[in-house]
Image (cartoon, rainbow, N blue to C red; front, side, top):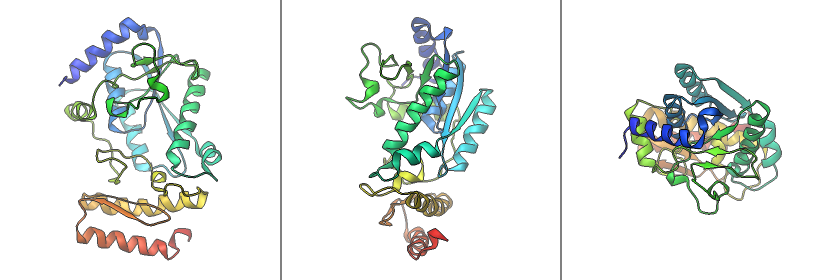
Length: 268
């Protein structure tokens, strides 16, 4: 398994061959382990980078605050863009999951933000476990770490794409990268947190009220999960409880929150 220094050297070598030291790179930075490690590696490799973080009305403020502190510590320019309006246009009235619409909004916002602000390359923290055959960014004719796709109009740099998730996890741990955790259940067993809108029931017609419900119930449930060191989330509007390692006490507290929201508390 590569060390952190090995990963930095690999990025340096690839960047020299690909001419990335002559480019301005805009890093799509969520504040999770993958994008945080990527940002740190690119900084250590001496590339010209800035960070871009998208948020919306229902984003976790705790993780956003952590991300801002992280870039400040690294001395990296950090842009924040509110995509609430675009997300509402793309998602409202359509069936879930919302994540599909949100990724579309973020991708195109990132593209135009980069082009309008003099950036030459976009960077994403995808690892090898994120690679899906047939996905747009996997239709690369050359090295999958740097994709120049006409449909996007700007190259994408994915320095972690050949590293499995467990390697990324170890590299981040080795250099003390510990993002703020909401203790969500997430859609995968690995630490894959995101935002509460991912818990809107599949095939449900998305509305602003349902987005608000997903945020409010899951914010309270995440506070319980964080305190009890379990991972829990609630689907809405079905109110299905999902939990890793929950004991009776945790489930009792989570159920009390769910029952209160079922009674209409979510719209007070």
